Length: 101
Image 1 (tube, one colour):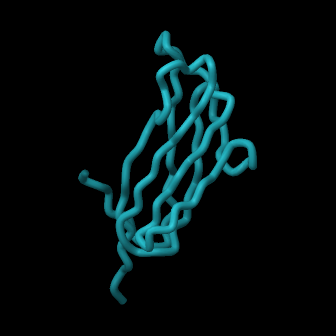
Image 2 (cartoon, rainbow, N blue to C red):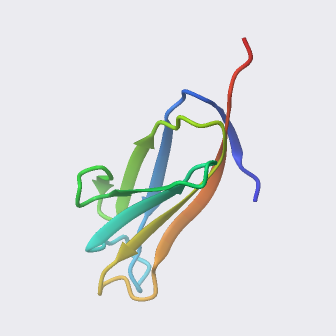
C-alpha cells in the first residue's frame, strides 16, 4: 500500500465517513480509530472517550500527533444496527519521517 510521507512532529488529520445500508451518511453507535505504530503498539481512540470528534452526521475525525518515525496504519471501526454490513469504514497508512538537521 502506498502511503503519504509526513515530517515527524506534524499532526495527521484522520477522517472517516460512515454510511448505512442505503449508502446515506449515518452515525454508528460506537466509533473507534485503531492506529498501529511502527513499534507494533496499537492505540485505540474512541468517540465514547471524547477522543474521536464528530464533524456532521456520519463524519468523524481525530488529529493524531505521532512520536515515532516509520510506517503507521489505521482503521476506523463503527458498529450499529443502522450500519448493516459496515465494519471498517476507512483504513490506510502514512509514513512519518524524521527531518535531517
